[in-house]
Length: 344
Ligand code: PEP
Ligand code: MN
Image 1 (cartoon, rainbow, N blue to C red):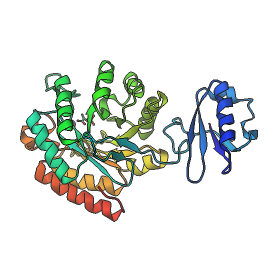
Image 2 (image 1 turned 30 degrees about the vertical axis):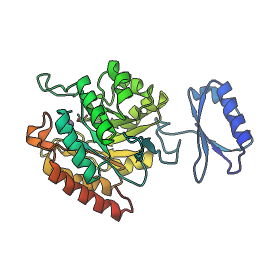
Image 3 (image 1 turned 45 degrees about the vertical axis):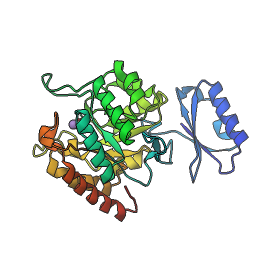
Image 4 (image 1 turned 60 degrees about the vertical axis):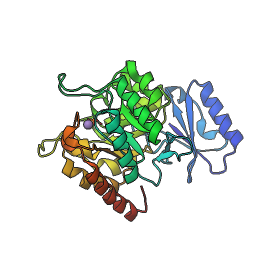
C-alpha cells in the first residue's frame, strides 16, 4: 500500500500519518519525488482494512501496490536509488552508483596474488574503472576446481584498496561469512547460484553494506526483484541488480545475456542496474560488444573480468580480457555513454 501525498502536505501532517501507521504495528518509508511524494507501508496490511487513511489531512490518495515486490518497485519509490561508495584513500571522490556517470568495476574472476591484483588495479584505474572486482570465495561447478583464497583473498583486496584507493566488490557464499565479508568489502556480491538462497539474502539484508545481486541462472526478472525484496525488507536499502546471462537452449555462448532485462528492470524498479558481459557471454571476444550494448540500453554499472594474463587466470580465463582489450573496451563504452549524455 502507498499513500500519495498532496503536493502541499505539511511536515506535521506527514508526521501524523506516519505516527498513526506505526501505532497500527506497521512500518513506513517516506519517499520525496519531484512529481509526488509517497509514504510506503511495510508489513501486514490487513490491519488497514478499517482505517480511513484517505481522510487524513495531507493525503491525496491511497493505492495498493499490484506487484508482489513492494520496496523494490517504482510505485513505491519513483526516484532512482543512488548508492555512494567511499573512495578507499583519504580525499578521493566517492563512487556514485545509479547516477549520471557509469561505473566500471573490473578485475580477475578470483583474487590472484598481491602483485597481480596490484598490477590489475593500476591499469584499470588508468583506463577509467572506479571499482575492483574479484572473488575470494568462489562458487565452482566442480568441487575439485580452485575454490578461492578465502580470508587471505579479502586481505589482498583490502591491501590493494589501501594502496590505490579502489573500492571493491566481492562475493559472499555462506551466511556464516556475511558479517566478516560485509565488514571489509565495499559491496558484497550475491552470485547467480545464490540468488534464491533466502537465508543468505536475509543475512546481507541485516548488514548496511551495499549488495550487488545477480540474476539467477534460470531466474525470471520477477524472481530477481523478489530476491531484492528479501534484502530490502531487512532494512538494507542499497541493492544493485545485475543481469549476468541466463541459461537458454543456445549453446554457442556460455549464457544468453538478456539485455531486455535492463529497460524492463528500469521500468519496474528504482534500483541501480548492472550488466556483466563476462559471465553473460563466457567469451573474451564478446565482452566489448556486449559491454557497449549494456551501456546502450541503460546500465549504470558494468562488471568485467580482466587479468594481465588471462591464460594464467585461476578461473574464468576464457571470458577474461587483458589490459589492451580492456582499454579498447573502455574506449567503446565511453563512446556509447557520450551518445547518451552520460560519462564514465
Ligand atoms: C563471478 O562474478 O565471478 C561469478 C561467479 O558470477 P556468477 O555468480 O554470475 O556466475
Ligand atoms: Mn568469474
